[in-house]
Image: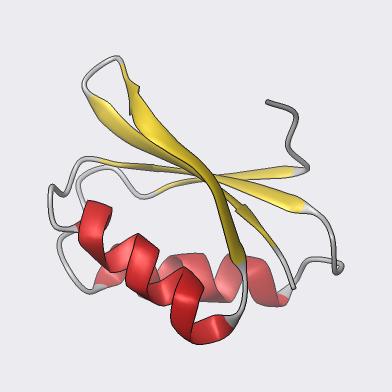
Length: 75
């Protein structure tokens, strides 16, 4: 999937991946896609809840090279 910006939250524990994702999205234009990498297993549930609460779309989530990968589209 194509993305406009990437944030690597590897090694960060809850709630930092969400806090840093929120900050990264704040600097982006509506409609742009942010790719987030995380090693925190809790980020799977957290990222879905974050997307729902903020109105940003969670386009896709999966795993790659032992990390969780999320694609969020800024509202």
